[in-house]
Every structure is written in structure tokens, then in C-alpha cells.
Length: 328
Image (tube, rainbow, N blue to C red; front, side, top):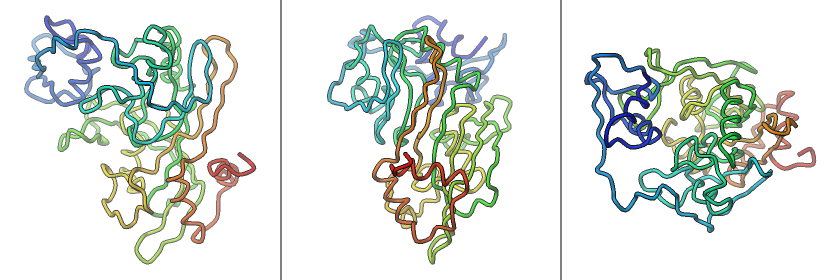
């Protein structure tokens, strides 16, 4: 059976979603080897160990505390779902160091705890998919279990179209490409994910197309603005894939090159969820939304204006939208 299901079936073990987080945190081993994925299969005779904190009696209430002071930039809302633009620096759901200052807490304040899908667990109400803390842009939340499951099914079937823009190091020669690898937690650093051919690694597919290229300067190798299309939703997927092809995201403290002087003034990765498109799971209508770049990313991009080598055909259409021009 699946590892997370096996763990959750044990006496005095937390919920399945909490067990999955134990795996992600590197606190579970199978036959003395760190587990690679919550979906890894456990076989008869395997020896499974999990490091579990003592339960906190004060934390018996599964309802998250509402936080009405976190602003929600809602772009679409009906009785079934919300599409919002998440600001950089906001964590999606509670984690160590973030108890009541997350997007989930804000959603509870906005919708009420009884009006959010719970399929991801009581600590992730409404969450359909995540954005990293320092990634900004469009994401979805569901107001009931049926909608949450339907939207997650769209992601699994690869019919929920999610597009991101990122500015990366160097000159990307090909106008478009596909990166198809396995991704698993790094064996060297449990905070990082890594491209892996391990049997437990999960398939990750990212396609990209060039929007604009910028020539090299005296202290850098130039930059390339890309649009990335996610066909899967692995942790840190775009950031890991950009590192894999040696074109790391500008400003990425975890996977980047660590040269702050070349990050164009950014203190976080240049990664923004700029477009989502999907069939509404109840009405069937097509929902398509776009999101301009926030001020810090727009300023970084505009600082390269004098170094542009020209936009591709896709860039001529998309970049003005990103910058909020008349074509947006």
C-alpha cells in the first residue's frame, strides 16, 4: 500500500496529510533508507520508521484560526471556487514557523471554515495546488470537496492550463523545449528537490518557450525571459528544471548561483504564475485569467530594456500583458 496511507493507519499516528509531510521532511525511513515519496509502495516485511512529535493537547481543534488581516487579491469568485493572485512572501498553508499567517488562514477568514474543501487535510482548507512562498501569481482554491476533487482531477489529466514566467541566467538558444525528468528529494540536502532517476522519483514535465533575450553585460552572461507550462505539479518543479538545464531562475536563493550582484535587485526568485485556464467543474464554462507582474519583477525586467536582443513572436504578445500595457 502507499506509504502515507500505511503510516496513517498506525495507532497514535496523525492524519494522512500530516504523514505525507513527515515524508517530505525526511522523517520517515524504509529499511533504514530515507523514503523518497509519500506514494512509495510499502511491501510485506519492510521496516518503516517515522519520527513523530508528541501530540499537543492544545492543538486538538482541527479548525485553523481565521486571519482577516491578510489581504486576498481575488480575481474570480463564485459559490464553488476562487482564483486569486498570491503575493510573494505568503506561505500557502501552516508549516513550522507559520501557524496563523498563511493563505489557508486568510481563506478561512474569507469563506468560513465550513465553506472550504478539506480533501488536502484540515490544515490545508481550500488549497487545490501550491505556490512556493516567494512565487507570486494566480492560484485556485475550492469551496467544497467535490470542486476540490474536480480541480485536482483537471491537474492530473493535464487540462488545467497553468503558465508561469521566469527570468533565467544566460542565453537560451532554443525558442522552445521540453524538460521531462524524475524529481525526488535531494539525498544531500533534505530542503531541496533534485532531478533523479531513482525508481521513487515522480515524473515532472515542463515545457518552455522564449519570450525575450537580453545580451551579456560586463559582469553577467545575459538573461532570457521564458514562459513555462506545467504538465505536472512537483515541489519546486520549474526551479529544479531550470537548474537542471543550467539556466537558474534569477534571484533563487535555493537553486540559483548565489551571486546577489547579478540578481537585478531581487530578493526572491523571478517566478510568477501569470495565466490559468480551465473548464469550470460545475458550469463547464472556460475560465481564463491573466496576471501582470508585481512591481519588483516588473522593475527587474524593465532594468534590462537597453539590452534586449528582441522578442520572439510569443514575446510580442505576452510581454506587454505582463507589464500592464494597452494590450493587457
